[in-house]
Length: 236
Image (cartoon, helix red, strand yellow):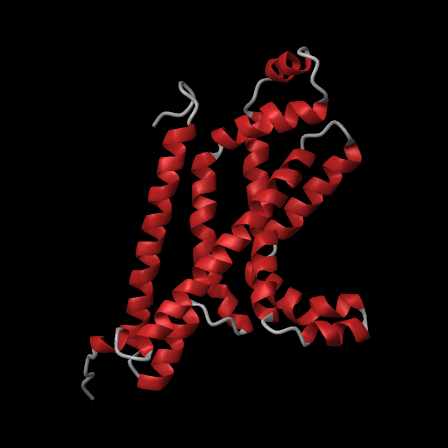
């Protein structure tokens, strides 16, 4: 049986609109989850190098648990089992929330990526010499002021290259959200396949969109890296 190609399915209504809606939701989930991941990752990464053992334990436990459990498993847990943690009554109310799967996607993806951001940031902290910590404290700053005004900004600038990878990966990982019913880009390509039986064209279209999205992210992060690189420490 010969296969009849129909690339027009990628822009013919309503299928072209489906892809655009999927792309929009992919970008929304990715950006929102990234904001959560950066905020939480900075906090957890800072806890991992604090002189207080209990705080270091919390930061280490968070990082090691979340980054070593597959994202798909975590997404299923937060969506299906997560509401049960709040009790039967509150669980029913949570399950009635409109768009719950989108919120869970942002939450789950953000928590998972935060563990990876925290590890990169810990490496950034480790690359800063002890003399620099002592020099900052000698100015009269408190430890909180030292981390907030000097150490964290410095470590972030050192870790821009690996953070670029994480920023790119978070958009690709949004495809996992389709497993809990989020109509992002991959989900929409499968919907087009189900409607038209042209899965090759629809998935190829999704791949091309992901490619351009990824190239755009890398380009933007390249500009950020060039703007904030530390002369003499970053090679390019």
